Length: 466
Image 1 (cartoon, rainbow, N blue to C red):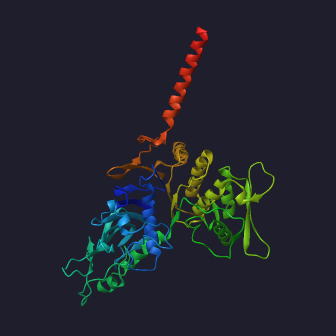
Image 2 (cartoon, rainbow, N blue to C red; image 1 turned 180 degrees about the vertical axis):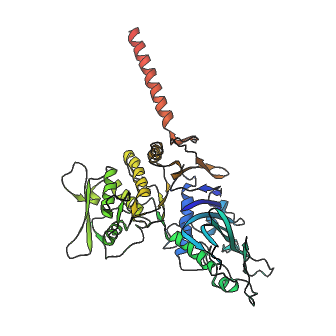
Image 3 (cartoon, rainbow, N blue to C red; image 1 turned 90 degrees about the vertical axis):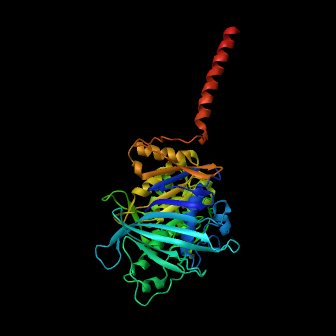
C-alpha cells in the first residue's frame, strides 16, 4: 500500500506537501484546482514503467498513454524548466525482502525520491538529476542507495552510485562512471558489476515495477455500453482506462473461478454474483446475466431493473448503470495488493446511488479472496458530497476506522494549488470544513427556512390586517 506521496513543481503544484494515504483516500476541490493531476502523476509513472524505451525518463504522451500530459514545458510548474520536478512516495512490500549478504539485512518498506530536470530548455530533454531508495524495517532506516548525476566538468551524462548508513564497496578494476539510469527509477545493469553485493539493486527496480503493475486507473469518460461483446478467452489486466474491457473481465473472472467472502468461515460467492449484489445494493438493478450467443464468441448482457418482469439489454437501462459497472468490476477484479485510482466514480449516478457506492467501496476493502485479505487501496477524485457523507457515517457507526480514510480539498490560489487535509475525528466529523466546500448548500437551506418563516409571518399579519 502507498503510505504517502509528495510532489513539487508539477503542473499547478509548487508543492503538494506530504499527502498521507489510507485504504480510502478522497480528493475534492473546485474545477482546475489540481486535484486530478495528483492521481494523473501516478498514472504517468505507471505508463513510463510500462513503455519499452529504457531511456525515456517520463512518458508524457503517446498512442498507448493513459493520460496525455503534453510536452515537458507543460508539466513544469509555471512552465519553468529551470526548476526540478521532485517527488517522493513510500510503500509497504507484500513480504519482507533482504539486501546484501547479511541475513539480518532486511526491509519491508521502501521510500523512493527523485529529481527530474530539463537538460536543455530548447530541446526539452528530460533527465534524472538524482534518485534514491530508502530501505526501512519496522519504520527504521536501514539503507539509502541511489544514483546522482556527476559533475566532472566535461558536460557528459555520467552518474555515480551513492549510499548512506552503509557504504557499497567498489569492485576492483572498475573505476569508470556509470551510464544514465533506466527511466526515472532504475539502476543500470552495470551497477551490479561495479559494486560488491549489489545484486539487490535489481530487486529495487523490480519492487518499483511491481508497485505500478498493480496500479490501476479508471478515467471519468467511460465507454458506452454495447449490445454485443466479444471475448476469446483472454484475461485482461483491468477493465481498461475507459472501462472497455469490463464484460471481458467479468467473463475472465468467471472462467478462473474467482470467489469472495467477507468472513473466514462465510460461504464463498462467485465473482459475477458479487458484482450483481453490488449493483443491487446500489438499487440500480435487480438481476443481470451474461449469455453467450450460440456458435459465436460473442456475448450479450441482460439486466432486470426493479419492478420489471423482463430482462433488457444493458444499453436499454439508465446510463448510470453502464458508467458505474466498470467502477465496481475494477474494484473487485484487481488482484490483491492493488492500488486503484478512479476519477469521478459517481458520474451519472443519482444522489442515493452515490451514497450507496461508498458502501460498495468499503465492501471492497473488507472482501476476502482465496481465504486471504485482498489489501486493496482506493484513491478517488470526486465531486460527490453524498459519497463523503456516507464514509463519515460509516466511521461514526464503526464500520470503518478513522485511519481507513484520508480526505483532501484542493484550493486554486494565485500562488498555485494548495492542498488541505480534512481532519476527521473518531465520530466521523470533519473538524475543518473549507469555506464553500460543497457550494452553499447549508446556507441555501438556512435562507430557505428563514424566507419561508418571514413569508408566513407576513401572510399571517396581512390576514389580521384584512
